[in-house]
Amino acid sequence: MDQHEGLKKTPFYPMHLKYGGKVVDFGGWALSVQFSGILDEHQTVRDQIGLFDVSHMGEATIKGPQALSYLQHMVSRDLTPMKVNQVFYTHLLYPSGGVVDDLMVTKLRDNDYYLVINASNAEKDVAWLKEHAGGYQVEVKDISAATGEVALQGPYAQATLQKLTRADLGALGYYHVIPAAEVAGIRVMISRTGYTGEDGFEIMCSPEDGPALWEALMEAGDDFGIKPIGLGARDSLRFEAGMPLYGQELDAETSPLEARLARFVSLDKPEFIGRAGLMERQQRGLAKVLVGLEMVDRGIARHGHPLLQGGNEIGYVTSGMYSPTLGRNIAMGYVPPSLSAIGTEIQVGIRGKALRAKVVKMPFYRRPKK
Image (tube, rainbow, N blue to C red; front, side):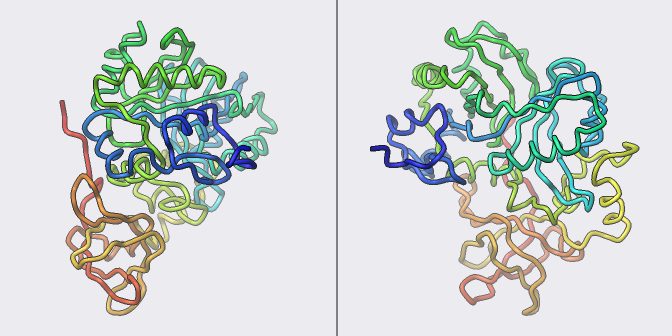
């Protein structure tokens, strides 16, 4: 009997079992929170190379004669400068300026786009996209079920993947794709993207090819100390790199401006859903901004902990943990702009105590230049 009956399974589910993953219910998906241990996996990606199952992410295609004008209406970033095979990070917004989701848009050809959306939001996002497609000559198609996806991340990602493909990975720029390549004889799309702060690739394949692709990558990476990586290290890696997580740093109430993601918003675009809401927030003055925090007192700030000054609640922690790379207790959270300057001291409410923390620069971690 399947011990995870009732949960959705990715094409790589057999690999989770084979490699000893501690499988949990992650938003209805059977996924491993860890394999060898979160700290070990985190360090493996920073120093060597790790393989992630990210098939729970949603994928959609946007095609048709008006695909570009439709997406220009839907997302906060101007897509007109995009070149073929380029990837842009952007947002779907509510009219208020709050975030429906953050997503990756890839331009495959003129009026042919490929979207990667958050797992927890996939159905909501596709429904939102379809709801607003009326009046445009465009087809919105959810291809999540027809897509397997892994992430290969770490300093030895290129050396590992290059063993298995004739595609010139050295010529593939960051946030660009090779739309059709072969890896170990399997047809894939290779994207030089990731959610770890390290160099790496996200590789899309047919679900039936998933396990064979996984095994080929594990074998090719063996010389470099490759390990399978679970959800725990995926979160700690993205957190150190200052990458937002929907439901924590971003949500329906929070705009990209407050999350310090204004560089991905094109307010000079004449029109898009949420533009008026963003303009209104900007003119009114932002009520909160995202900051990095480092604990001064001993304690770990966690998601949802209140931020305090003078005994008054002034904000909240969005993500927080012990940083394996830095060896310090750090966090991200929202505070009023007047308390956002580097070095400002505030307190975190942890188990009824007000423990001192200070505002520090983000991201906490940047990978060393080659």
